[in-house]
Length: 164
Image 1 (cartoon, rainbow, N blue to C red):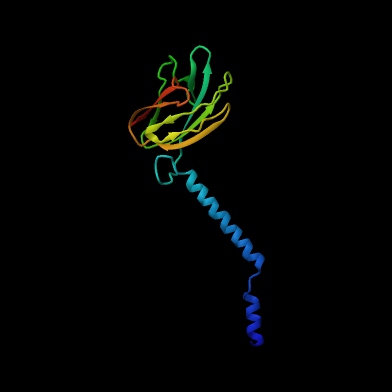
Image 2 (tube, rainbow, N blue to C red):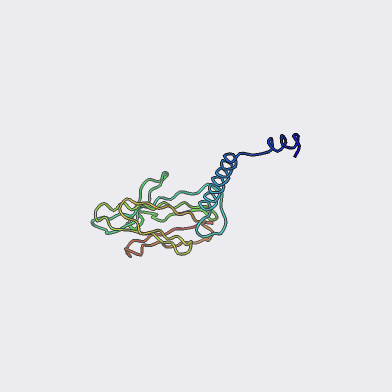
């Protein structure tokens, strides 16, 4: 190899540290994209949905007189019982919207585990201990009124209405 070829090869060589740095950056970017796609895919559809969700906060609690109940908290409407005698206890969302359901176990009386299920939208939370929370995203892609319930406490019920 001539002197000219050696100089050219020296200029084109990439150090091992540079290759490692680029590999780490590519792996981090790939992991970020994977996380973004998985966290943007609602439980009842097979593709990511990049839309602003309708946030619904449901609290599981225990009332000494009524037993285990769901309560709804909304930034617009305040707090209301979903299984008590309050007027219009149903949750309403527009059809086609992305819903971010935030379920929180706030049963400080009995500290019993709680869950929430909406079968029609494939929403099934884990059994949550006291003060644990879980968020599930789903598409409100079916019109109608749907019940949600607890497997652990059959008296806990509520309804979700998807309006056209």
